[in-house]
Length: 303
Ligand code: GLU
Image 1: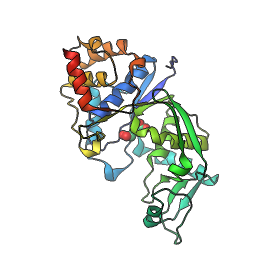
Image 2: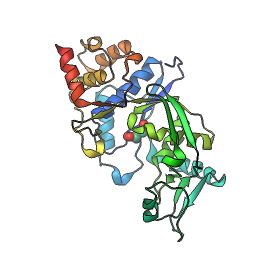
Image 3: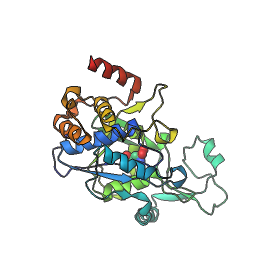
Image 4: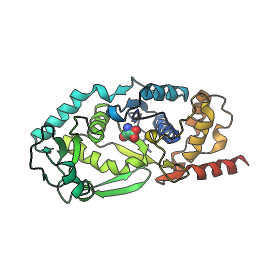
């Protein structure tokens, strides 16, 4: 684990619904790792996609984090205010020939399962999407601090990927890379659903001459049906009015010892004990955990 006090980590929710248990696991996990390294922990609101946004969700998420005692060490960053910075990065990639305007239609893309290798568009679209050029044979490997070695043939599996959408919205991949670098993030801790986005982000960092941070992907929490809990699929919100049970459950999901936080009476005292007792080596190196298995483990713990 990094022992540098220059550690900077973050939690970066999209405001597509209230925080659910899976988001709390990512928020608490990233907070604990930052505190363990005597580092900074920042919150960034990834409000880039108005059609998917739920009115009031951003404020609700920030209020919930506050109730859980998870407070940003600096001002909360809002991606919706950073269009100019994304445009500068995009212009640079275009000028260097690393990105291009794509005139393919939806049906042309569907024919290659959404993987773009070569523009098939005949008609020039007025608002083309902008993609990063990913030549065949482009493979990216990295060492995830929890999941181990990961490799992806980005050329084959992903192809040229979108940086700015045809509808004018910024793609998550571009914004996250620009912001992680602009905010000096050294450590990205998030859910394992983003493991397969990481090679794309590393390629973009290289294309923009930015440093690659360390990555640690926490297990994704699955519901009883084996589906990922997600804000937009209406997973139940964590109860910010009664933060201790959810904090305790998130602590167990992070593989930590129940006894270490037993005497907590509010979120602040829970976090103080958790910070002391947190043992990174106990983090489960799996990409998913089912809620049902966690409940059983909690029951067994209580006996
Ligand atoms: N905004 C993304 C989400 O809510 C997370 C981005 C990240 O941590 O890189 O899924």
